[in-house]
Length: 176
Image (cartoon, rainbow, N blue to C red; front, side):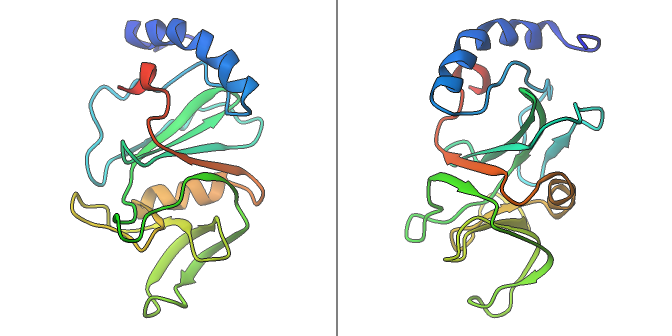
């Protein structure tokens, strides 16, 4: 299990142990292992660990401040993506959202039939995670846009009812 982990990842593991207990007490995903990406993610970048643990639900966390989406399974970070979000005048809402609906070939009924591939609906008011161009100056209408290739993998790994937490400044000791 520890094969291939860098010293930095092991150090972060030690730092996360106290956070793990506090997170569990607040009903947040327990995190004990994070991916060693080796570089900052930029627009359009993502990583997905193909040999990730297979058991348990996907736990998805969106950090609006860092413009990142994290996926965990059994306390292990299995994926990370750069994201696009809503602008200040149409912000992406924070909170806890179950995945209400999945549609691989969805089109917006509100925004000129815009394609929303691999859509994971978070609210009936139109907020979802979906495939999108992910550029530095790109914004959504409040949705969470991820690179379409990442959206395809996330769609396969997420289930209806899986919880998505949308927050700001997620696990600063590990990700800052």
